[in-house]
Amino acid sequence: MMLTRRYPMPLGFELRFTLGTTDTGEAKFLAEWSPRLPGRFEHRKLIDAYRAARHQFLEEVSEAIGGGVLVLEV
Image 1 (cartoon, one colour):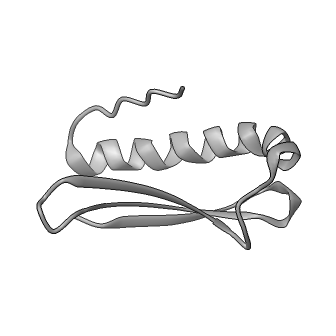
Image 2 (image 1 turned 180 degrees about the vertical axis):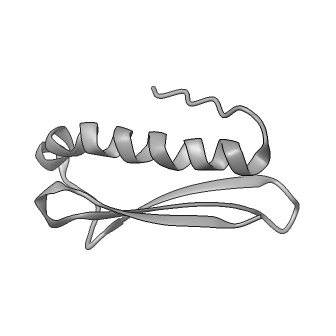
Image 3 (image 1 turned 90 degrees about the vertical axis):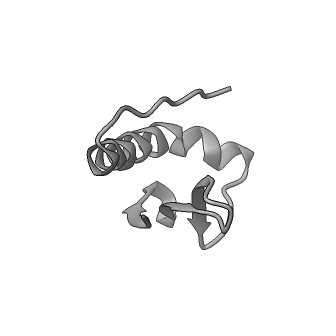
C-alpha cells in the first residue's frame, strides 16, 4: 500500500506525507517539506497546521488499513 497526500501550510510551505513499505515489508512514514525544511522560528508558526494535517492524513491511513494508528510525539 502506498498513500501520499499534499497539504498547503502557512508561510508558503507545503507538506507531503507518504505512507508505504520498504523492500523488507516494514512500514515507512515520510513527512517532506517544500520548498525547504522550516527553520526554528518558522516551526513555531507551523506546528499547529502540521499537527492538523498529520491528523487528517493518519485518519485516512487508519481507514485504509482498517485499524488504529498511534502517534507518539517527543
